[in-house]
Amino acid sequence: TTVCPFRVIVDTREGLPWHFTGIEADQRDGGGTLIVQLITDRSLATGDYSIEGYENDIAIERKSVGDWFNSIGQDRERFEREMERLAETKFAAVVIECGWQTLLFDFHQYTQMNPKITSRTIASWSVRYGVHFIPCMNRRHAELMTFQLLNQFWRQKQHELKEGKQHDPTE
Image (cartoon, rainbow, N blue to C red; front, side):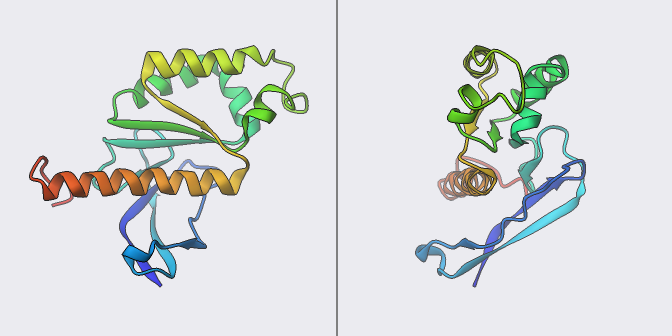
């Protein structure tokens, strides 16, 4: 086993949190099963997941398929305020627990909304707010993608620290 070098903050309001279990560590990190330490007793200003010490720099918002359609429909104004907060971070993503096939073609069990609203909202908000929208195949894929985003952000920050380009906010 290998212990993840950073701790993941899971917002206290996250209704159906991921646990990041069963992830294989890279060979360069020692291989084996990765143990991801979670902090579950903190509220995040924005998003559902972040890295301890980098809460103002990275935010990942999780959306189930039903929540996605509700967020761009009935709760659109509230969700757009969330986009404004996400835009203030260095890296922000909305990871959706379903793929484009469901969002654009197999959406009928979730909404009567015209599927153009999904693609146009993603295009518009990606440009306006600089937020990355990442539809995934399913819940597990979304969990793994979120971990990879957090991991890549961490690695990039460690590289910048090593090069002397940044101060370590965790100190």
